[in-house]
Image 1 (cartoon, rainbow over the protein chains, first blue to last red):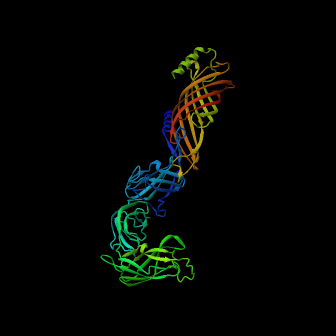
Image 2 (cartoon, rainbow over the protein chains, first blue to last red):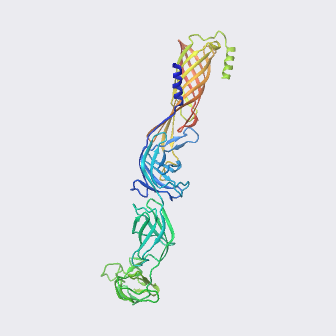
Image 3 (tube, rainbow over the protein chains, first blue to last red):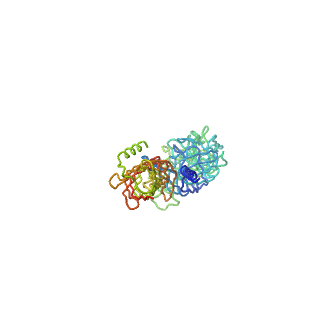
Length: 362
Length: 201
C-alpha cells in the first residue's frame, strides 16, 4: 500500500504547477485631460494612432523578467482588462510602467491602429500582475461617444457690436463639463467661444464674440475628455453695413485730443445710424507700443442724427485716463493717418479706410 | 541504456574476477559539491544524498541508486525595455532570478571494483524527476513559479575505500527542461562535481 500512495503523491507533485506573487492594488484611473473627474471618462474615437492615454493609479504594479535564461529576454508587465458593455484586454505594447504606483496605457479607439470601438458605458478595470494576483475596480472608466454636430444656427444673425447667440445641435455633448469650441479660418488665429452653456447632451448654446472678423469659419468642438468634431465651413459671419463714412476735421495735433464729426452717407441697403450707444475706434498705434496697431476707442461718442455722430479722438491721451497733464503726451497716438471703425447699436458697422481716415499731426 | 549494457559487458570481460565488492548490498551516501547550470545561472553549492542497492546482477557490479539533491543557482540582471517608460524617460530596475531545483534521480550504476588500484570507478545513468521553483525579486517584490518535469542524468565517479565505506569523487550532468514565464523554455540542467562518503550497510 505504501508504494502506490507514494507514487500517487509523487505524480501529484510532478503534475502540479503554481505561481505566487504580489497582488496589485488599483485605486483609480485618470484621464490626464480631466484629472479631477472620477470615474475617468474616455472617448471611444479619436486619440491619434495610439488611442487615448490614461493613467492607472495604485500600488504594487510589478513587472518581472520574461525568458530571462534565453537569448531573447524581455519584460513582462501586468495585464490590464476592461469588462462592461464589452470585454477587452489591452495589448501588451499599449501599457507603460512608470513606477509601482503608476502605469500609463494607450486605450485604442475607433480611429487608432489597431482600432477598437468600445461600446459606451461603465467599465470595470482589472490589473493582474504577472505571477501575481488581480486587482479590480468597478466603474473605474466611463467610455463615452464622440460629439457629433448636426445643425448650427445663429437665430438672431450676427451683430458687430455685441455677442451673437449661436445654437449647436447634435449628440455626444457633455453636460457635466464644458467643451472647448473654436472658430477657425485659414490664416487667422483660432477664435475660442467663451460663453458656453451645455443645455443637454444634444444642445449647446454659445455666442460669437462681438467684432469677430467677417468670413467663413470652420467650427471645432472638443469635449473635455479629448474627443473633438470639426465642421468645415460651418459658419459665415457677415454684419449689416453702414453707409459711406467720412470724418471732419480729417486731422488733429498729437498734443491734444480732437473732436470730430463722423458722417454716414447711406444709400441702397446700407444702414443709417440708429439712436443708442455707438462705438468708434481709430485703428492706430500708441507711443507706448508703436509697433502694434490697435483699436483705440474714441470717447464722448454722441449720436447727432441718422447721418452724424460726434466723438473725440484721444490724440494725446490714447488709452490713458484723462486729463493728461504731460505736454509730451507719452501715451498718445503715434502721428500718422489711420482708419476708423464705427459700430452701430443695431449691429451694423462701417469702416473708414486709412487712405481717407484721420491724421494725427506731429 | 544500450551503451550502458555494452559498457557493463566490456567491464565484466576486462575486470579481474578477484576484484569483487565486499560488504553489504545497501549503501547510503551524503554528498556535497559545486554545480554550474548550462544556462546563464551562476554556480552554486550542491547538496545531495543517495541510497543504493548493489544488485546480484553482473557479478554484483550493478547498483540501483536513488538520489535526492538540491541546488539553487541564481542570476541577476536589469529590467529594461520600451514598456518601462515614464513619459520618455527609460525606467530600469535590477532583478534577481533564482532557480531552485530538487531532483529525485534513479540511476543504474555499474561499478568496476578496484579497477584502478584501490579505486573503484563507476558510471551510471537514469531518469529523474526534477522539481523546479523559479523565484524572481524585482521592484521590492517577490514572485515565484513552481513546476516539475522529467529529465535524465549521466554520472561517473571513483570511490576510494576508507573505513567502513568509501570516499568518492563524482561528476554528473543532468538534463531537465523548464518552461516558466521568467526563465523561458530552457534546459535548466547542469554539470556538477561532488565529494561524498558512501557507507556500506
